[in-house]
Image 1 (spheres, rainbow, N blue to C red):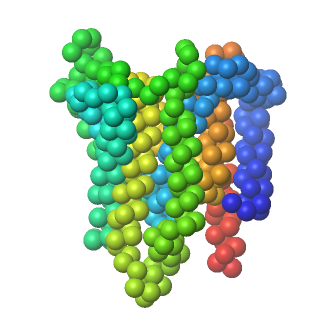
Image 2: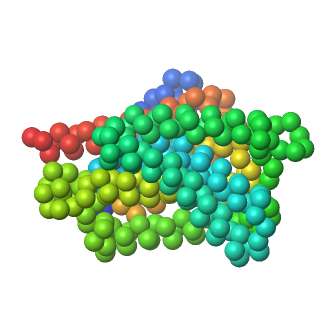
Image 3: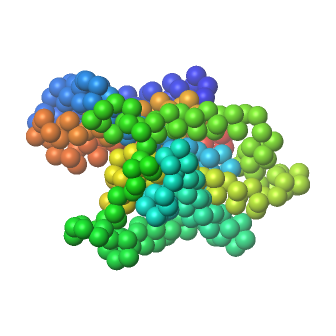
Length: 337
């Protein structure tokens, strides 16, 4: 991520916060006080920091998911569905397979990756074989995944005790170890950092990544150079979906310990903004994930300690996304002129 992109991202955030301040003023609150509460809620003590990092962990995976497909010229709007399918496969492995923790945790992560990868891979096949727009198919796959999980947790997978539409909890051997007691911060944060490093190494040092980037830059040139465009698309969507599936694993293995109708609060859609704000680079995705983790967890403090409705928090997040989109379109316009 070059300095110009970093400066553009910071500028987008500042503009979004300024517009957010106007919205806060419109509902009769002081912007500096509200932003102060949000910052304290996100970083005021060890529990707050842990909560922010838990959100950051999920954001890293959804950001990586979008960034991986984007660099191959694909728009993956289906991360939400891949997250649910990853969580479902993770729950199945974590509930019905009995293993020691040292084997059970990697198996659940692999299952979650495969769940999301298969869901994303279907989109890749449709794109490569039938030229079906991935922006349409991924959105449709989101609905199928979410309603499929809803059907399961109200039927075959519904917990044996209780009446809530949710599965039985995964076994203790499948739960990620806690880093800070009485919080949900687990080793999942370090797993996310590991995947950021792998992501950076992959795009910098592998020939496969070079082929994908050529496809993402110009498919005709890639085909002329002998690169199998369809194969690169399918593989890209498979891996992208797998990373989205790992986001579901983090929610299941580290936070919820089960799957339910509301497993995700729209995290998959945040991945688009996280990746674009971070310039699709590993370092950029880390910092933008931290920002969205702060907005997500710090927003809870605003809801608790002020009279501001939760809708204002969503408006603030939407403004950040809007500024990013404006910046992306502005850059594309300059490239065309």
